[in-house]
Picture 1: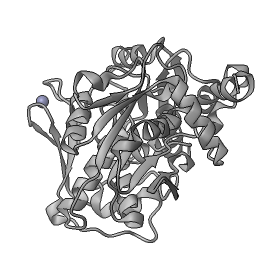
Picture 2 (picture 1 turned 30 degrees about the horizontal axis):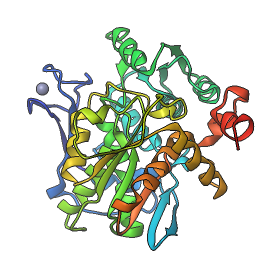
Picture 3 (picture 1 turned 180 degrees about the vertical axis):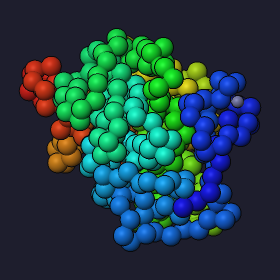
Length: 374
Ligand SMILES: [Zn+2]
């Protein structure tokens, strides 16, 4: 496993591996820096899940895995453009978050904590709960009050305590105000180890496709986009590839927080805030300036989509046999919106599973496919 250090992105202060707080004393976001110069690319054959890339992952005494990663890549073509779906919704708890949870919960085990606290729209809460169950530690998850029923039930089923806390932004505030000395805040919006897990997405893309020209990623807290950026940059540093993909960040109407940071934006008409893309309804993500910076440096841009485009994209995806959640359809909707801007190989991660939405008449899937206009 690789040597690493933890550094504040704001003031540059360096922390030891035993540091338990989620941010720097200056308020800055922390990041893990891997000693790439003394590491090498190697893929372990017998390791579980993403730990097959452990030569480039932080050195952790215990590896908590549920077999995450190695998700399929499906090739498609449209009007002479080849694009690829990476089926991240086939991870153990139905989202790419499992990559991040594997590393973040392994780190929590190393720190010796008995309980982890997390705020989440649902997917990360489910994922952290499952990995905490695997590790034998408690989890307390703060969720928006209107969390889809299927997501709520899954968190409860993994044995976590669930706190309903108003909007998604209010859940972020409540978890921090409830934090005591005993609880370990593992929150993915801050946790530097989480990104070490999501970066394995880039490694897998490299293994199969070598390089891609664009990656189109839904953005709330930015853990996938930042992981993709970090992973590809590490591959460049290792000399395995010469270029990084252009990043297209995708947000939904009413929650386009990156608009304040970027000038390169393609947007649809926004009349109503999205009610469908529940996994990206966050506006106060601590890493927003760094997400914007990654998009800018990659020469990418922001795309903003509305529910009308998301519904169309969702129907097309189900028409292809892909059981995704509406937020994943936001990425495909953005692909269709910005299609003329793209060339080369385009990759669209399908981030979350639609199977979590089997929840009666309140389910967005019910509204789109059963009761909605056809
Ligand atoms: Zn600092």
